Image (cartoon, rainbow, N blue to C red; front, side, top):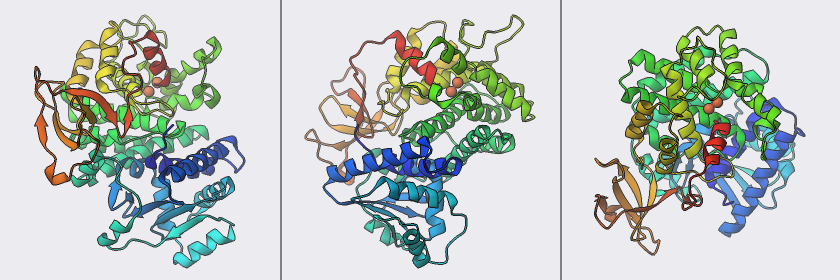
Length: 478
Ligand SMILES: [Fe+2]
Ligand SMILES: [Fe+2]
């Protein structure tokens, strides 16, 4: 699979987080070290260079003078490590060994205090025998940022950076932090932090939907841990969007966003070898996976949570509109609309996310699948989701029928006809920003969207007919 700059950053941050929980030779820590080392070697080879650098500047990752959205949200632990070391980033050189990376995780997980200067930080790396990983000098001036290595991630990302995204980035960093802290608490059998979750939920409900789809577009999950966290963050954001579309009050929106953040807490009680099993689950394993909604509701009640909206969403988010699904509903049970709403957003998220080792599905195809299966989703809520995201959310990269690549700038009046800006000519050569034509696509005209691209990854098998297993797999992952 093609390796991605963002994936490498998120893997590094994930490794530091893992190492806070486990020892060096724990299979999870080893797996991340191995994954990172292998992918890094592949990427360096593909690029024909002999090193790979990551820059950190004012709390965000940068590459060639541009901030990276997704990694800045998911990679907080690596940013914090760089800040404690007082460096401007990290540079990895061949022949990088797995042991260098494992030691990097250990030192990163243990570092609590800020070092006096870069010399001390370099001495710390040397004392721990870390070879082939260098600490780079801080980029103090904005002009220095141009010196950072590499090329921009994508036209869509560069666009988003140009807009004022700072407030949204803060909101999403808080959401990510909330979910990852709570996951850690559950794995340690500690109580979950519901007041933190509520604060993040309120922040999200109070922020604008503008740009929310764009942020989510850049969230990638190279490993199962970042997938699990990112899933809840995206479900929360989608739920707030749909709730707003349906005219919910600000108070209910904040509760709904919080419910999205904690809806899968019960997965912390499912053993990882079952949760992330690659093959088919046995009936017993399936039963354990399906216990997560009830387990989640119990965890919430044990933490003192009293909101019926939040508890019922955790309990009922796998119950279908026709009453099937799990857990089995008692006769007296009244299904809450919040649970139906989370259910819709949950499956849509699972279908469209960049999952580990799986290409994402376009929103359009996800809606095809969801609309086809009658009785699964609340129709009014599903319609509200389609209205609020559009078939081609802003920030999506698309291939036009004349083989030019473009980025979606805004939803059009017709769902499948957005306003696009052409970024590459038919030969694939980039067009200078000032010369990029903006085109409003129209139904019945020759020029149309041929393919949905997500940061360079084309949709997997777009011609494959829809299958029952599409819904089953995404249900299992959600
Ligand atoms: Fe979920
Ligand atoms: Fe779930």
